[in-house]
View 1 (tube, rainbow, N blue to C red):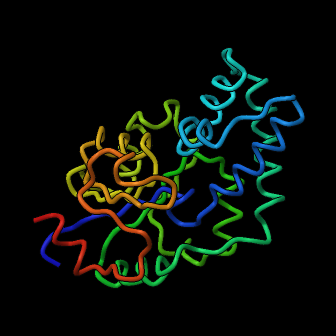
View 2 (tube, rainbow, N blue to C red):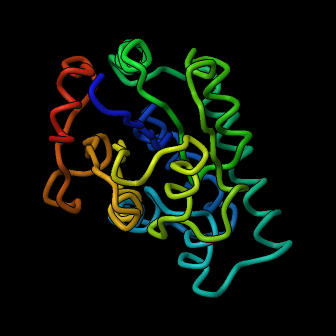
Length: 219
């Protein structure tokens, strides 16, 4: 290849279409507390957001420290229990990642989800041995749209932000990648093009993607 590049994937809505199951988990979690967020509220204040933001928004007060850890453990435990029998990668992503690896592309995952969720998905989606960087919520102090997770991923992969292409599905995630100075592909699993910041490319899935198609984004 003419230039060294890295491709970094978010997880929820990018590797697997998990958001419907997160919605189910949050609905159950909030119903236990007599709260019933609407679909519009979920779309605006859940997808791509950290649990700290989500809890603070829907409880209408700051949630942090031990309380945050306990609430997060409860909600994410619900998610894993609901999702464990439904894990399926988005069409074409495993083949796409193999194609990238065969061309010497450095690969990483950068998610706002906790490691336990990442481990669950990687136990069923066979890409772990291809990843040079794996980062989850426990690895950062500032969550998306802050660029920390993507800048740290680039550092771990030994590349500059300008050498990175990020796959993201949420407004905050795309903003984080753009704030890091990276190119971005918008994955349209959770939002429409109109609802997202401007990306270099938009896709519904990975079936028509290849190394040859994405390398042109660096021209």
